Amino acid sequence: MHRGFAAFGDALVSIVEHNGRLRRMQMLQDMSDDELAACGIKREDIVRIVFDA
Image (cartoon, rainbow, N blue to C red; front, side, top):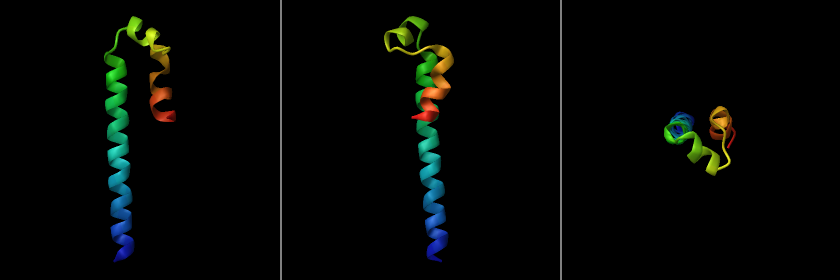
């Protein structure tokens, strides 16, 4: 029984972390190229930056 709760907790944490990454990716994608450049980010690097962090 305990193992089932642990697995459920792990799955829930994974969902929350993934959702946060998707929100961050969308936020960066919504920025202009000039805004990204001001942050030192290239548009083609957004996915790598978000998911490698």
